[in-house]
Length: 130
Image (cartoon, rainbow, N blue to C red; front, side, top):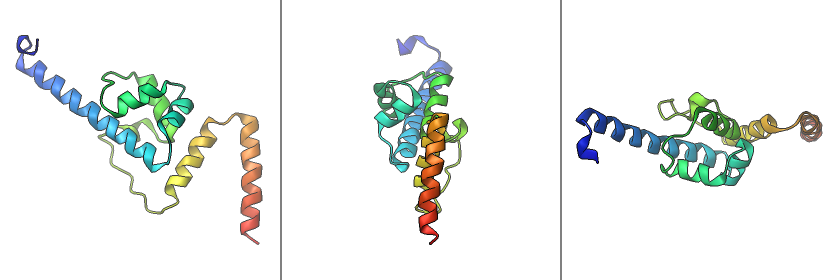
């Protein structure tokens, strides 16, 4: 019971719970900013969708480093940027979310898929320069 723990342990646990809620909110904000669903993040991270949901809702209290690395990779940010203590990167341009999504897609693409993405981008950019 909580009464059996020393006050400093109770305070630490309360702090950890608050931190996990902030972490979940940060993950959700980054995911939504990039227009990704929980399922898309889970798929790109190689984890279960319910794990992303529980983490975002503050119900997953002890994610491992590997899980956080995979989620960061899945949304296209560094692990440091995922943590609540990191300063928020302001979205200075409306296309920043699209660039992030494109980066996340490229990051999880296989080498042959990267070749295709580069070819497609070249065609699209070639049209816009005409």
